[in-house]
Length: 226
Image 1 (cartoon, helix red, strand yellow):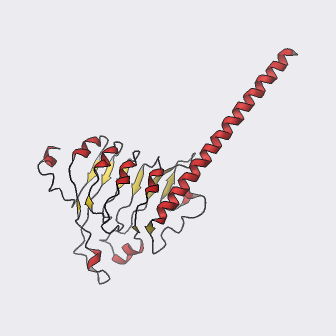
Image 2 (cartoon, rainbow, N blue to C red):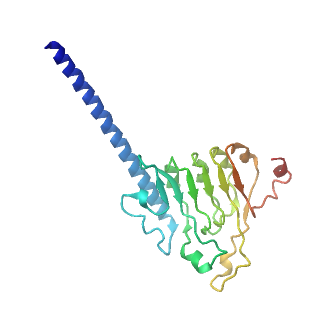
């Protein structure tokens, strides 16, 4: 009888521990999901989306929002793919219908598990590449090509040691003039440069690097030695 009582006590303790761990785990997951959703909503608030391309970005099931991919079991965001599917060498009207602009909000850094980010062929109209990209240390893929960023590439990209794919190509389309385009549409091209290349030595996982039309004049012969 005493043995049965002890066994019952042990089972009760195990049940309590298991329940407590499960509840804590659920609470932790719920907090993570809320944090991920809030970060995405804030990120969207910085973007200008005149044609409502991100109309699906509403409700609580953010893993089904356009361009978002999550881990299946946790709901953690691992990919944001908002590239413009119509590069400017296509038809200007198609490109402009899918174009995103505006600012990149710091809330992006709250997505700690983000591995894939593609903003290529949108129009950020001469905005410097945000330093915050250098804080996304789990990134494997970063594509900012043709997105009209300008200025010097941030040296804190050295933090992206897991990066396997990096495309910063600064595509030019000056020969693709359309009557719907003004000079302002062109003024941001060919204005991206690299101050030094020392940060590249830290990109130990890199397999692809695209830097077409990026100004490398300030690094001189260092580029060849690298």
